Length: 66
Image (cartoon, rainbow, N blue to C red; front, side):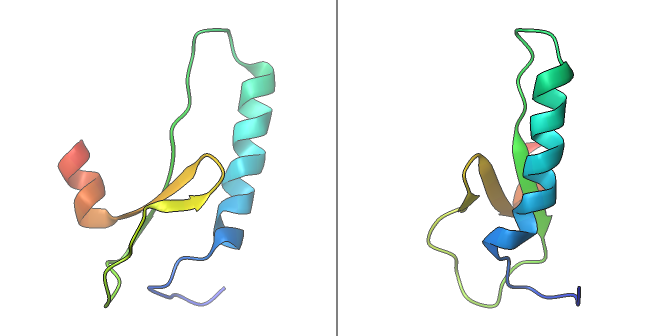
């Protein structure tokens, strides 16, 4: 896959698969938060929703949340 500033829902699929495996193996009460961190886009994004259960965050926003 080439580097791009545009995030696409299909980019979340491997993360969703990993999350499904972790949910199957984890203890109850443990939650997962799925975020795809990316380079800031050249135009504003109207919503961070990328795919069910996955949000897209520009890396600066991700760091600000830490």
